Image (cartoon, rainbow, N blue to C red; front, side):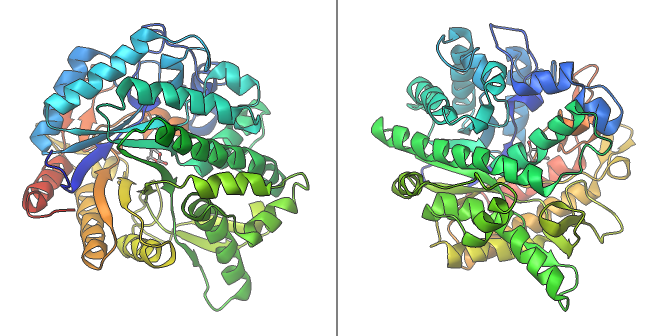
Length: 464
Ligand code: FCB
């Protein structure tokens, strides 16, 4: 890649694509436990799925074919994550050289194809043994994670110029872990949470932000000369009825919890007072030591990864955590991850420009799935016009914000391939490439061609 070129990419995560769960000395993560032992997908969508085989990306022959598809698409970047227990089977201590070799080889394979690797260190697969010791609730997690990150910097930092510490901390801790907790307790609505649960999770998210800062410090201590950032799930909050003061207040708090909290934490090294107060009301033990904020201030990210799918329409509703229902979708044709509003992405990017000092931004995830209506087989083709249109309009929104001065360095689609979609197992397809989960056969959909045309039109004409 020519230095400074805008990055056109796609994103993935280890547990969703690798498979090979018992191969090459890999240890287990909490997701192996959630899926195999606790049967989380069965509880949520009624079918028992795991990521044990996923889409077989651990297999080198398969992965080389996948890289060939990336080249056909015209990608100059690919975001993937490292499975922490594949390189450290127990999470700390003993190193699994086969795991390190796998990632090192994959980086080399991408580079040989002219594709810039973006490496996420943590995309939700916390080592199972350490999770039993409390996971992010245990303050020792700061050191566990930093030491694992240090190992990865040493192993691939000479060839990887972009590291992402964590993926979507809020979704990991305030959504997936709470669903797992509800499944374990056999609660009837696994996706219904309480304010007390939110209060209880708050210190865990704090430890994660501290681990992020400690890892940024470690990256600089090693004098690595790339960039390090974090991928946040950002979602502008819109009151359902702007004339209703309760809806407006609920939307303000939702904005605080899902947007301002992580943004303030990683860009400014501070926490919003209203969010801390709202969580403290449900967990009096939630305290944020000044020394921790000082660590965060001293170790800010080099770039911000933005994962954007949709805005959140919010209504005041006391039966939801913190009194806000943020899961409303007025669209008739519904995308899995919320209402389709490219203008909300544009607005979000300008807000980051204006309120957060215009940091370098990478769109680290953006994409859609609509179910069978948008996965239409027609001979050899698969028509997914809604996905293609979604990608086109969100690329336009991104480029418009960039033209208006937002410092945007790249754009990644979620996802290149259909894959294991967490609590939904294999029932939700987000890929530009169809995967037959029985045979592992890949087949590009129409959105693949649409994205290829977009990249071809813009690549080379844009510096970043
Ligand atoms: C995001 C996750 C990603 C994928 C997409 C659809 O929240 O980061 O792994 O599941 O949603």
